[in-house]
Amino acid sequence: MRQSSAEFTQLLLKAGRGVGLPLGLAEDLVAPILWLQTCGLSGDLEAFNVLTGLDKGRVPGVFPDLDAQPGGIATADEPISAIYLAAAGCDSLQSGWPGPGTQVQLTNVDRPLLAATALALGHRKLDPELILNIETAHYVFSSSSEGGVICLERQAQEPGTDTPGAGEVWLDTSRTSSTTAAGTVLVDAARERQCHLDCEAKGLTADEKTVRELKSLADRLLVPESERSLRFGAGAGIIDSD
Image 1: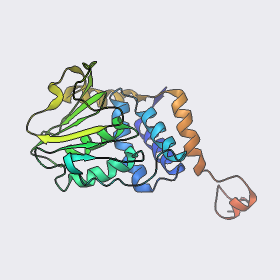
Image 2 (image 1 turned 90 degrees about the vertical axis):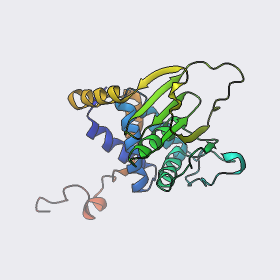
Image 3 (image 1 turned 90 degrees about the horizontal axis):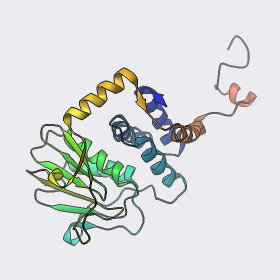
């Protein structure tokens, strides 16, 4: 189904608030999901899954500790919410994390694609000197000093190849892009520009069932219709002169 970007943005904000996300985190959710959806990836499904994980208690709503453990591996006993990881990670990027030539491996991330997208978009806002490479089991992102984001989908890997496993996100900063790895380019600067032009002209495409599921989360913000709710300011009032 077709939706305007403004309509989709409001749906995401309300769905986030509907599951109890603080306003700031609900707002942070919009940019990476909208980017994915605009560029032809399943942002709507990423949003629904990450919000449902928090809502059902499968994933705790806590900020991860991004201080690298020995070997640059930040492990977690419980799943890490991509929403909370993105917020903490984007803040850390402003402080120079990860350092030049340093690889950080994050484990047990519930939605690696969402986390990788948010970090790539956050990095390119900083006018960085170095390239941030972000790898997941299925995708590779590269955010360059020119403000471009490249995303490729990995081809099948040979057994024993040193690549992220399920739920892992690897990051490193360097002067070279890791998107030279074998894979299919899904988004580059030219593709991104064209997708945004198409979205402005025609709106974006979203899965009808997933949109309904997101709307069911957003509808939690609605006030039940009753005389009491009307007396306390909901709706148009209980008499014509209100």
